[in-house]
Length: 342
Image 1 (cartoon, one colour):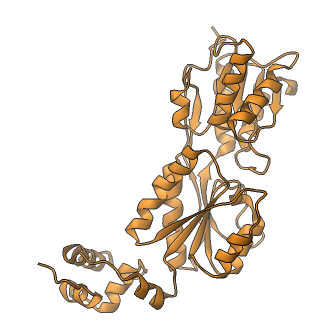
Image 2 (spheres, rainbow, N blue to C red):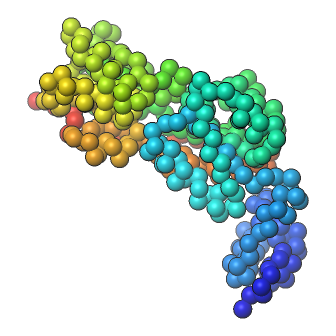
């Protein structure tokens, strides 16, 4: 039966290693062999040892807290990211602060968090992951940051940080080729917010696929969106009121695709009989909507897990080489797109 009070010394004695080695394993520091680490972890499990967070903070001059900073996106996007981050934080005895930050909002609170070193590192979601000023503020304070879905060339402008995402341009090309194979030759695109350069590569991919198919540039129609259901509705209306409307509309995310479908219905059109619609993100909404719509899925949970793990690595080893990780996406073909090639 384990003693009532379990200390680093207790764990070290059971594992047959030094107290310093136990401390290194607990703090996820490098230069500990896998065999030694396994022995220490086994002792920790047997003794039900829980690190003293106050002591860890005092010894390591760390807060053992991370911050996720985001401009309020769809709830599904944020939830997917959190499902990846939170298990990593729990496994490493870190807490996670959620810091919503709208584009028009003052940065005073975030700057205070940075200046007071209330956290050890930041994970930035789009479009804040493309905010150079915010990233520089974090790095200037000596803190670490990992970017999710960012178009920034992170080796330039002293932004030497890691980032994770998909190839949005390639995903846009794939969606374009899919629609073209199904006989669509006049296609509209509803963009996301202007600040989200990475995501809007999806529209550039569509345009490139249409050009490669030999279609005239006027066959690509464009409407600016703001990532929301309402902006998808308005963007769909702009495209459908064109003198020669598109036969298919590709929306930059699933919430805007749902808005396009609702707009089409209000205009007396049926999906997919009169208009085909596709989205992006792979949100549950895409398969629950009527009709379920074609979409490209981003691996949101993997984004969160990868970002959290690599942020912790950077905190422990400040000289680690930054990594750019490109993950796979997947196209789901559903009943919102009509085959005109038959």
